[in-house]
Amino acid sequence: MRGTSAALRPPADATAPVRHPEAPAPGELLGAHYGQCFGCGDEQPHGLHLEARAGEGVTLTAEFTVRPAHQGAPGLAHGGVLASALDETLGSLNWLLRTIAVTGRLETDFMRPVPVGTVLHLRAEVTAVAGRKIFATAEGRVGSPDGPLAVRADALFVEVKVDHFIDHGREEEIQAAMNDPDQVRRARAFEVNP
Image 1 (cartoon, rainbow, N blue to C red):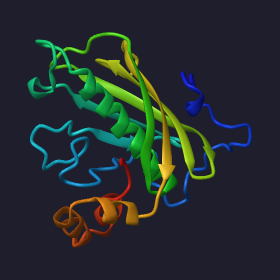
Image 2 (spheres, rainbow, N blue to C red):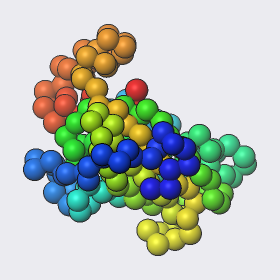
Image 3 (cartoon, one colour):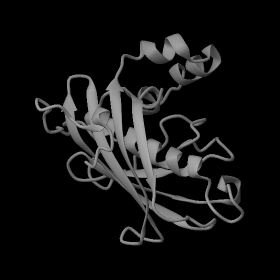
Image 4 (cartoon, rainbow, N blue to C red):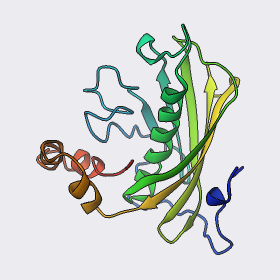
């Protein structure tokens, strides 16, 4: 982990991440954790529609296609959209740990422009765990998993209880998620992001 700030450097007593025994198998599509999620939701018309797959250990891969609704400068992805893609990818790692966590800090580096119409290939991994803190890193490449490096990020996630979402979310959305008959989707609805 590059850790451009002290907050993103795991402490000396941090441990290596351990994949939960019930985590999705390598290669398995994780699916949306909530239909209205900007990052992965299939009900969000201008969202990223990011698709993540479990990798080996505590890693995953994801991809999304930059559409016209995602542009900032003419013909290029907005930097905030790229940061959202990194955040969504990093947050999805928590499904492999089977923990609920929110983004505490996200530091991004933008290496090259990402044109509209491009598929951004992302790879993320948890690098360390220290108490409630989860340290992770990700990168995004243009056109293929081995394409030119476009963006990268380091992040700190903080484990929370489901009450975090219930106490701070809008009641209608909380109830809709909790009433979802699909137990996996219901559990995943409360997995990532503040």
